[in-house]
Image 1: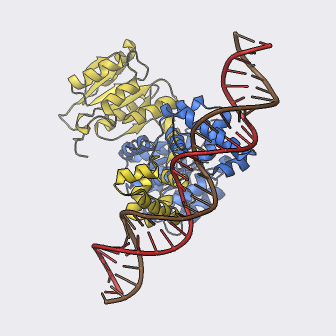
Image 2: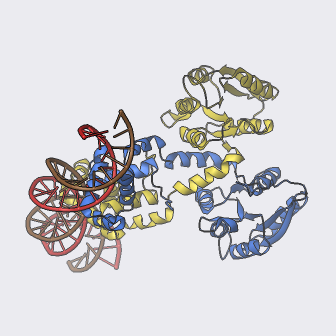
Image 3: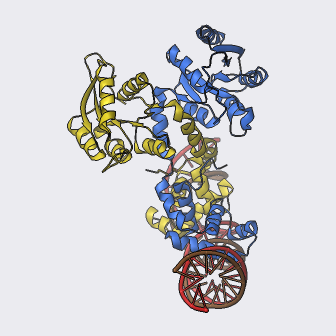
Length: 234
Length: 234
DNA sequence: GGACGCCTCCAACTTTCGAGGGATCGACGA
DNA sequence: TCGTCGATCCCTCGAAAGTTGGAGGCGTCC
């Protein structure tokens, strides 16, 4: 929350690395960006490996990342620079720019930690604007793909309303439900919680009774539907 | 895919309805938009009820929707105009514009079917641009909130990689897994699939064996984690 | 024609669940 | 102080869930 020192600051240049396997494309980006007073191109990479290494060595603020690249693709490289496994202090923002408007790329890039996603046919001003937004701690998704992103989001987003029911559970019962949702048996939950299996059974029964369910499977489903646990559960 | 007749077309005006409970705000939007040659304000509403009714009666292309409103809030109104329960032909695009940058509003609006989400402190040009984008079948989310949208998306998006395992299942086995993920018992699945319970047990055992799992609960978890089923499961 | 995978079913068996009783203890509020 | 609630444990018992080892039919591929 405090890292972004307002990118457009006078005197503070946005250090950009361009990663694309085609020299022509890199050149295009370069001429486009070099005319901007607040943007500085600190390097070019022609594959994902180079992109990750150079971004770190040159201390880039933002990496302009293509998806299709040899050796390591843009999504993997994004994961290495901005993914959930990277310590927050070491993260480098990534703006993914690709020719291909594929869900696989869009959702993949965003899951990988990209802060922005643009199509290469976007207006040059949009690219620059997106770069500034990303460097400023904001995000930007091409309007062309935003609709699909929203649709997908609506599809997979849990309903917080359904989570209201979970409020009637005691703390311990919620803990047990959390364990249930990992697929553990009563015996395993007991071991993990350092209590007897009989106790776990009591809790499970209480959970089912309070939520009006008939089996642990239904409890797990509710845990997912309500957002108590998420597929990417970290 | 074919509806969007390129909003900025000469001769084709974007019919906009403004929904906000504060007259001053409506007035602000009005003067801002009336100077645009391709935008036509077809009405104003001061609550959600009015917004929905007027949008339909005036055949609006886009509704500029505030969130906090009396009688029916903007999220509910959005659901009524663009929600998943509305037949595609009757849907009216909604651009949610609010003062408050709350996750509840952002995610709520997008889940409700909004095509765009802006904060009221956005630049006027951005608002106009967003309006055109939405009318053109595109989407737009304020860069200020896009980061959080992406982060949330990454958190809840299933990993398609984990779905690869499901490919080794037979069609019938996948059908059984789908039923499992609704919380049905073996007996209920049997009834629903018009087979004997013993058959269902065979299939369930096969599913568990193929996926290397030990209980139906784990199978259901995999179904969610892989995206075979989603919380918003329609 | 045989091998193979899938779907359907069966029976017998073990293990796990989950419900239905209790019980004790401590905390907290009326 | 009493009542309530949560957490912990106990036991019983019936009902699910899963395993194992079949079997027959059906289609495909070689």
